[in-house]
Image (cartoon, rainbow, N blue to C red; front, top):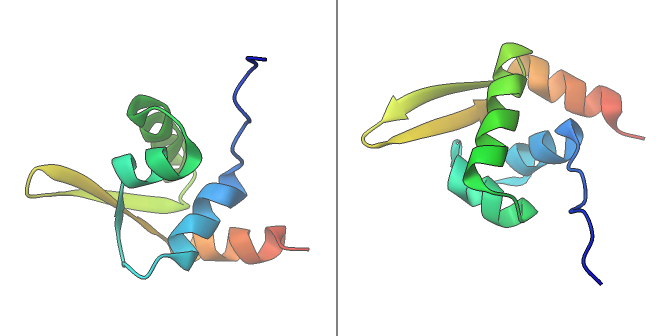
Length: 80
C-alpha cells in the first residue's frame, strides 16, 4: 500500500553529519540515505543553514555541507 513518505527530523539529518566519517556531505548522499529527492533534502539543508545548524560552500562543482557548533549542541540537547 502506497503512503506518504516518513518525515525526517532535523535531529536525524544532523545525526547523519555527526556519524559520517567525512567532514562534509553533499545533498545527494543525504537524499539517498533518507530516501528523499535531492531538491527535498536541499530545501531542508537550506532551512538548517538559516537556523545556524549547518554551513555550506561550493567546492568544485558541488555544494558541500557541514554541521556547526550550534548544530552539534542542538543534537546533544535533542538526545534522550
